[in-house]
Image (cartoon, rainbow, N blue to C red; front, top):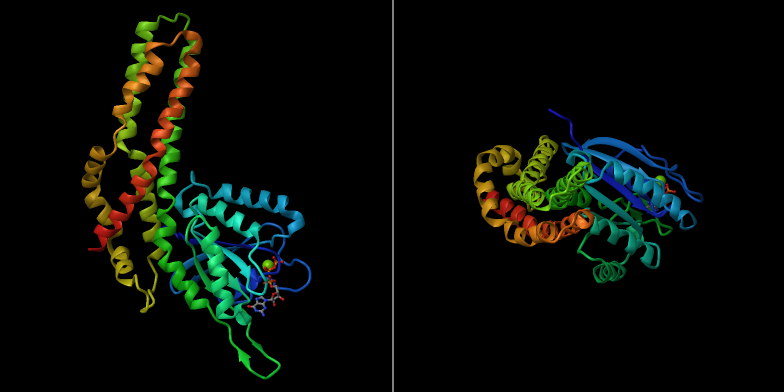
Length: 365
Ligand SMILES: Nc1nc2c(ncn2[C@@H]2O[C@H](COP(=O)(O)OP(=O)(O)OP(=O)(O)O)[C@@H](O)[C@H]2O)c(=O)[nH]1
Ligand SMILES: [Mg+2]
């Protein structure tokens, strides 16, 4: 069996306490912590540990400094590319923990903008309010309201204190928030994997379409004679085959099965905490997610073949390439057709999401 792990990136401004949080989560001093100047060196640093049976791989990042935003963003984009949608789900960042210091008076628009970028890219984001030892309930609620008002999706937030300390009056403050973060990881696990399935499916379908267009354009370039009627007939047949292929939704099923397998591999050794609301579901999933998928594969395909159909727009597409094209504008018209098909493909997003949610519900019963 592959040793897959649950990948988490810890991001946030320099000095907010990212490395301290990682050390607390792993219960080990593995990443350097410090005051004054930025501590964690440029790049992403991987640390692995089994926590409650879950293989966690955490990427501690160098802290963002406002005068080095461009460099930081470039590093981040490079890393995200390694883990982008076209990669296997085991490579994805399954969650982003975005750290905001509870001691800062505000959540800056920069933070909001960045978090929204991740949400737009279908990442599961959890906000970690670090240094929450001095955070009042009032301030916490204000922070949450600001997030709710400004983020494009609802996100979970957790208060964390990663360092125990003794106050001047002798009172001890213990570390807190670890269990809540672990619960958040497990609770959000399925969501963090499924949120990206529709996006990856759409990416693959668009790739399939783009390849088809390039192939046809190359063919056009190579042909000596352009006799519109027979040529367009061939094109029409070939377009029909592309649409047939898209309607089979093979891309979706490949992505879904990759994701389900990765998910079951990662939760293989998981010890579900007894107080977790989702524990029943997780247990069932753990025991038979892959076999459920295999047993229901044909059924699911059946539902798909009646739900998703591109054929109604085919007549319009054929009109674009078949009726009016001369050799001169056929190339352009093919690009036009690609755009039309792509916008049709994009409309699948909510339907795919709905389908995955219903899959989870059926499976829970
Ligand atoms: N009071 C308090 N201080 C904390 C807490 N977590 C971290 N600190 C302090 O905050 C400072 C910065 O912590 P780091 O963990 O190095 O911060 P970082 O975000 O990793 O910083 P860079 O690596 O520079 O990006 C250190 O002096 C820590 O001791 C906390 O929960 N409470
Ligand atoms: Mg650090």
